[in-house]
Length: 193
Image: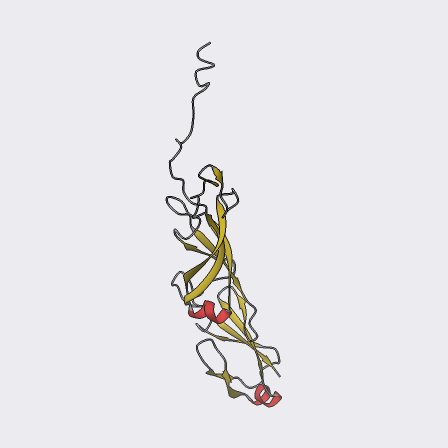
């Protein structure tokens, strides 16, 4: 009989007063393709739910409902963050800011999901970039040297004579940097005559 009811009336789990780890938070970070190419630091402001500073998350203050959080123990605050964007970051990739999530002991983490904004010049596929370049019919038939925009600045490219309209030419290593430090992608130039 004692075997079945040995746990009745006893508290199980963590004792009261023990601090708990803060909640992980996930948010979206919208950046341009150029920001993804260059990487670097970016300032960001987010509204996050945090522990009430008045009642310290209990929801009560001196036996009464907390007037700041209305008994929830949580308040919405605006926090400023400095985010380091890795060069070549991809759409949908997550950036982790350790200890920047919900309050606790220790604090939770903040995860930013990258959303790349459409670019008027380039289209990205993996680490490769695609760009349309208007050229004259004479450039296609006779061949010529043209300036092509790249993320690192304009470069010269030779069009072979007799080139067909809509042909793709490749500029090796002129695409997006690889986040893992490997070789950069390529840039493909579509000749539009």
